[in-house]
Amino acid sequence: MRLLVTGGCGFIGSAYVRLALAEGHEVRVLDKLTYAGRPENIEGTGAELVEGAIEDPAVAGEAMAGCEAVVNFAAESHVDRSIADPEAFARTHVIGTSVLLDAVRERGVARYLQVSTDEVYGSIESGSFDESSPIQPSSPYSATKAAGDLLVSAHVHTYATEAVICRGSNNYGPRQYPEKLIPLMVLNALHGDSLPVYGDGRQVRNWLYMEDFARAIHTVLERGRPGEAYNAGGPDEMENLDVVRRILELTGRDESLIEHVTDRPGHDRRYSLGSEKIRSELGWEARVRFAEGLEQTVSWYRDNESWWEPIRSGDYREYYERQYGRALG
Ligand code: NAD
Ligand code: TYD
Image (tube, rainbow, N blue to C red; front, side):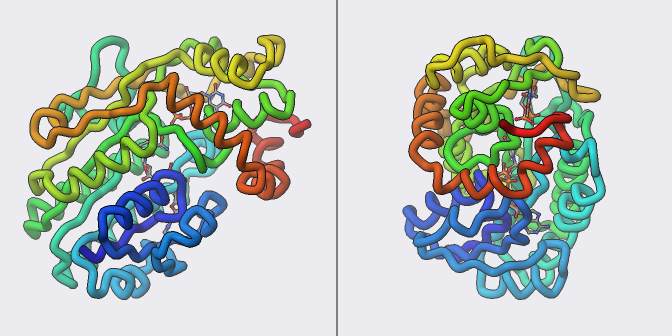
């Protein structure tokens, strides 16, 4: 297939680009190159890069010319940024998804996959969400992602668009922008900076290695039933404090670096995503357990200073000061 991958310069999108190329597909990437869009993530892979925004109808339409499928990763992906400044989230997730779906319909593109998140279901105290759980997002990030998912369903019902949705739980792995919990804590620990844990740190996340999510997305693209959503949850759940303690062990630091800071407003307590449907219908299962994936991730950040140094010494410093009320050491 010839694929258009939007947001392919980001963390998960670039893992998906590598997987799709390895499977023999041709890949064109459409990416706005926000702070999180790193062209170096796909450098040398053979993917074609078009710089532009999914919410621009002319750009989106032209980029999908000759493509059999569109896989939409393009997003503002960080909850804390959505709390500080929600507008870009609505533009990309709502207008952008709507523009892509219109272009898919007008150009007769055979297949569309929307990359989504367990956060559209909100927080769950016990048990796990499945695909029939109510959509109850709680942050501007998850609310606008949910709106994108609902637009996909509307296009399936109204125009018989061959679209599918794949919802992942929290991803981690190499090339994740260091605003997210795991890379932020890894880089701070490597530098001996304090580790800012929100509130009591007992929130639970369901961790999924990004290559497992990329494989789930490709499986759903190829074999998912049109109009259906498929959840892809990670194999392990963990409290944030336990994640941070493991990072301290892997970086040879002690717990004195942990600092409890003001909690995130409206912080979802627990995410847990059941993967029964994708397992029984499509045979997908996560392969990488958290202990192994975290070790690989810490090693990757240790060995790839040339990837993160320009980020950590650039705009990220200002973001960090704004978000955490202090400078990086
Ligand atoms: P990321 O922030 O690393 O990358 C997002 C990419 O989208 C960047 O390359 C950015 O430049 C591009 N982009 C942003 N706005 C755009 C626009 N308007 N037009 C074109 N390109 C644009 O994000 P990620 O963590 O790789 O997430 C990718 C997708 O996976 C998102 O849809 C996200 O909601 C979803 N997801 C992420 C996680 C996670 O834990 N990170 C979990 C489940 C689902
Ligand atoms: P994050 O990586 O932002 O993902 P999400 O909010 O989408 O789950 O955060 C993961 C968890 O880590 C979440 O409970 C918030 C917490 N967290 C901290 O405690 N400190 C931090 O500096 C960050 C970025 C996150």
